[in-house]
Length: 238
Image 1 (cartoon, rainbow, N blue to C red):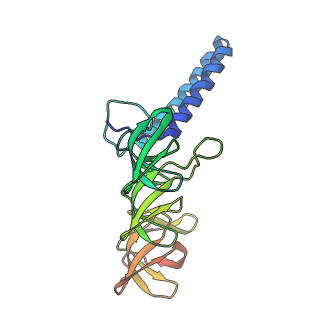
Image 2 (cartoon, helix red, strand yellow; image 1 turned 90 degrees about the vertical axis):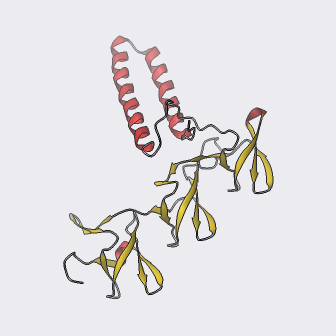
Image 3 (cartoon, helix red, strand yellow; image 1 turned 120 degrees about the horizontal axis):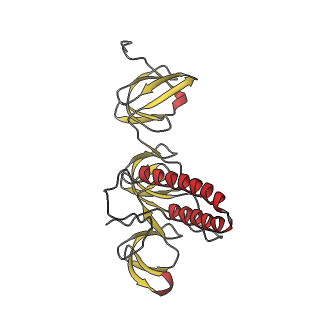
């Protein structure tokens, strides 16, 4: 049974439940009914979000949303080192190994399957137009208030190198609607012909969620942002 889940959803659920319980105790019967309806609506919203997040997971017989760290769990520490839990100690302290070196910590970010709009295994492009594959996703580091920063930390591979991103990755998509004017959009997908700002035409090979495209120029690959190319209408003969 899988146990990788997002703690943020658990915290939201617990906070909503606590608020509901305190309000229920202070309310009269009529108010209780109204609160019950409101709480039911919030529960439906949480469940819908959970269903969307779990769309690539196999069904299990558990409805837990805990992120449980155990032996073998992948974690990231505050120094952005990635390793696996190898020992469990009292008071929430974990022994984990990074390469050949062991460490101890009670402040580790658990691995997730989804974060910042990307899934593990997605092909992504970074702010420097380097294209790679997401290998692992981790929760944000703990902040001074004891909560987690909203920025996920994403490990991705470009060639033989591993890098850590704290946002700014965009996933490859099957198509992108490029709209230069409201209501006038043109579909860009692999195989679409574009004209660059230098009036050169190329055929798109990859498309990303922010409209960037990759195409080949001889033996090299080039990337353009959405404002630096024009889509050639299908059937134009180019």
